[in-house]
Amino acid sequence: MHDAAAARPVEVSHRRVLAIALPMTVAHLTTPLLGIVDTAVVGRLGDAALIGGVALGAVVFDFLFWGFGFLRMGTVGLAAQALGRGDAIEERAVLARALLIAAVCGVALVLLQAPIKAAALSLAGASDAVDGAVGIYFDVRIWAAPFSLASYVVAGWLTGIGRTGHALAIQVGISLLNMALTIFLVLGLSWGVAGSAVGTLLAEMAGAAAGLFACARLLGFRLSVPRHVLLDRKELAATFVLNRDIMIRTAALMLGFSFFAAQGARAGDVTLAANALLNNMVLLAAYFLDGFATAAEQICGQAVGARNRAAFLKGMRLVLIWGFGFALAASLIYLIAGPVLIDLMTTSPEVRAAARAFLVFAAILPVVGVFAYAFDGIYIGALWSRDMRNLMLAALAFYFLAWWLLLPLANAGLWLALLAFLAARGLLQAARLPALMLRTFPSS
Image 1 (tube, rainbow, N blue to C red):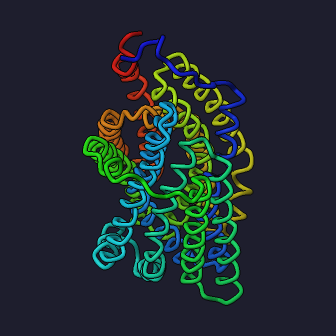
Image 2 (cartoon, rainbow, N blue to C red):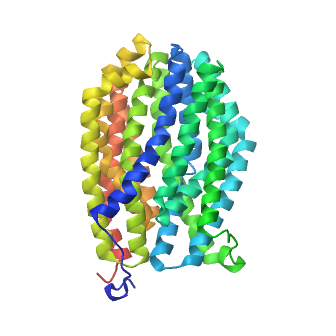
Image 3 (tube, rainbow, N blue to C red):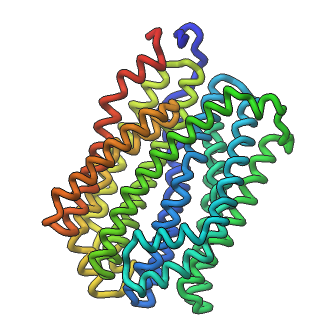
């Protein structure tokens, strides 16, 4: 029972929300910056097919790696709730279990690279020139899979135990190294698309090594976990169910964005490149908002572990307030400075004109989607994975319906369908929240 008398204290304040959100905002911002740098550097070559190839290649790996986003999200929730209960042994076990799963999944992706590549190119339906660029990018970057997934685990565990500063330092290090290597290899050594992929691979390898060292140091280099704890049937079953639900949810989310990219590809190389540039701006805002979602994951997860309903509600309220404020600011910035950002990312006149034509959709997306991102963090922290999965699938179905109805509007209709998808996610999660609160805190 989640009795108020049995609740453990949890600090919830504006200061704490910002102390978690701002470092993680910077960390999350570095992820879309990788795509922006890759696209911008290759964009200086002035070839729309190469721009589209790198952008589409990045989407392929977003789908692959973000499909395993449960390694980060599930680890955050499990570690945060263990912290809320004051269970130090389980905190270590959460890390060990997740790293084991990451190793198995990463090796499997490398072994299955041929069919994955074939399926990705078939689904994309892009031109031969774009397919060639995607193939070069894929063949190199796929080897980063084990290291990327290990980094997901490390980031989730550090966030769950409240060490966001460590997570930030590691992610920023990966990003800076990636940017430097990409610029050097693509423009300095003229390696083209392959140079972009090699830079990402080397950066991911270095980041995984640094992250594992940071975790080991925080644990005093005592990495062993009692066998009966690590292989506890109840915990393993709960972890499997959690990971399954989050994986389905994340796969559905990435299917939505990959569908968006594929429809742009079918509209031609210029439209694909324009959507790719705007999508980088969308991801920039999304990861910005994800900083506050991460604050919700940690605070709400700890509150559930501590059985503290008041802390949970206060944390949720503060995250929603701050998230909406930052979403509004992002939308205003894009409306004003969007054309300048587009010009910085490409020299192609055709791509610039096409991107400006659809800029307004990318600009308003943060305000439309802010509640979807905030509630994702709340649901992840509370480990409401089954409901999050089901609501995501319902929103995805609505997205496809909206796209079909808006087909006469071409690319504008595609953008409107994406906005409808994000709005549906937030509304459905908000409607389900009261029942989940009663289930999680039944005595209140």
